[in-house]
Amino acid sequence: MPKKKKTPKSKPIYQLKIILADIDPPIWRRVQVRENTTLKKLHLIIQAAMGWENDHMHQFEIDGVEYGEPVPGDMYYVEDEAKVTLKTVAPKSRKRFQYEYDFGDSWVHDIKVEKILPLDPEVKYPLLLEGERACPPEDVGGVWGYEEFLEAIGDPKHSEHDEYLEWVGEDFDPEVFDIEKINLWLKKIK
Image (tube, rainbow, N blue to C red; front, side):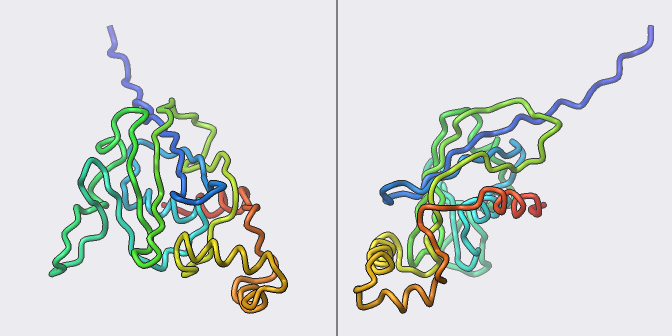
C-alpha cells in the first residue's frame, strides 16, 4: 500500500488587539498575524498598523523579559527579538504583553492575543481587521503632549493652533485612520 503524502500543517493565525495605553477615547487596532512571526517582524507590523514612522527605539516586555534589538557593548541588555516567535512567547490565547515605542515619548501598547485561528489560504497575512482613531503624530510629547496637541488643534483661538496645524498638516483628523492604506503597508512587510 502506498504511503500517504504528508500535507504541510498550516500555521495558525494569531488575532491580536493592540491598544495604545493611557489614551481616552482609546486608539486601537485588531490584526491577524502568523504564529511564526518574530517579534522583530511584529514590531514592523505594529508600526504599520498604528501609523508610526519607525523613527525611534522600541522593546517588548513579556513575562518580565525585555526583547528588542541588541546593541553590542550597550549596558542595557535585551533578548534578541529576531530570534523569538510569537508562538514561543505567547503560546495560548488571552496572553497579554506590552510593546513600548519611542522611549522619550513612551508610547506603551497593551497587546492581547484574542484568538488563535486556523490559517485561511485565501488571506494575505498580516492583516488589519479594524481599529479606531488616528495614531498620534511622532514626537508630539507622549500622552500629555498629545492631549495638549488635540486641545490646540481643536481651538482656533489657542496660541499654538496654527503652529501645530502647520506641523501636522491641515488634513489631520484624530478620529480617522485609513484601514485600506494600512493594509497596503502591511502587504509590504516580508
